[in-house]
Length: 257
Image 1 (cartoon, one colour):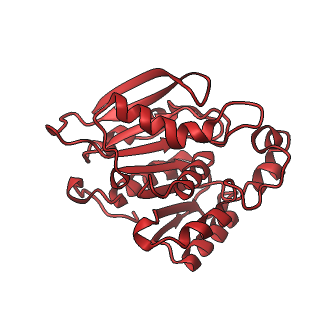
Image 2: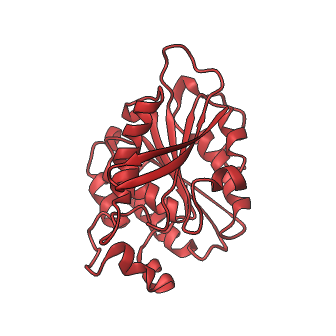
C-alpha cells in the first residue's frame, strides 16, 4: 500500500494538524475507494496504528483506504475552551480526505473504528451521523464517560465541561437509543470487542447488552487479556474482515480467531 503522512489546516480545529493515510497499491481505474477512519487512544497519536499494529499488512488484503487522524487527548469532543475535535473527525476530516483522494463519498463506503478513547469516538460519531457511516468498530472502548471523571479527574471538565452530559452527544446509551428508532437500513452495523481482564470490561458488557436489547446488527468479540495491543492487533483483522465491503472484499480469514 501507499503510506502518506499528511499535514493540512482544519477549520474546525483552527490550526494545522496531521493524519496518516494508507491507500491501495493499485487503484482501480475510475473506482473510488471505500475508507476506514481509524482512531487512536488517549495516550497516543496518529502514528500509533502503524507503530504497534500490522494495519498496513492487514488492509492490503482489501480495496480499502485507512485514515488515521490525530485526536490528541480530546475524546474526539468539541472542547469547551478549545478546538472542535468532534466536528473535525466526524465531518471536516472526511470532507477533506475525499477532496484530496479518490475516496467514496457515500455512506456505504465510509466506516469508522477505534480503540479505548478512539472506540468512544468511533461509536459517538456513528451514532451522531448514522447517515454518514455504514459500520463502526469499537475495541476496548470507553463506553460511559463517568469512567473518565472517576479515573482521570482533572481531565474531565477540560473535555466535557461542567454541565450534565446525560442525553448529550457524549451519552452513548442515549444516542444509540435514538438511532435504534431509525429504519434498520439507516442504522450502522456495530462490531464491539473487549478483553475479559480489561478495566473497561463491565462498561462494555453494559453497552453490549443495551445495543442487543435495542436490536442493532451487533457483533461481539471477547477473549483473554486486558487493555493491550496484542489484543487490538488481532481484533483489527477481525474488523477488516467483518466490514461490509461487498464485492471489494477478499476474504483471507475468519472472524473470531
